[in-house]
Length: 88
Image (tube, rainbow, N blue to C red; front, side, top):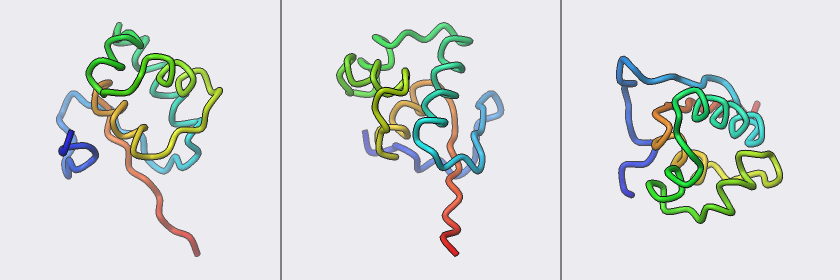
C-alpha cells in the first residue's frame, strides 16, 4: 500500500505513539491497541498484506519488525507512529 506512514496529520480518532523507537515496544503497544479495538491478527494480516504468522511473531515480541512492517500494522490498527530520529 503506497499510503503507509505518509499521513502528516493524525485523524481525530487515531492514537499517536510518539518517541518510541524500540520495535518490540512499538509492537507491544500496537498489540494492546488492536486488542482494545477488537482487531484480530488475521484482520491485520489481511489488510496489511503481511503473513499472519509474521504478524503473530511481531505482536508477541518474538520478532523485531522493521519500521515498514510496523507502519503497515499501525495503519490497520488506526495508530500514527512518530519516530524520534535524533541520532546525536
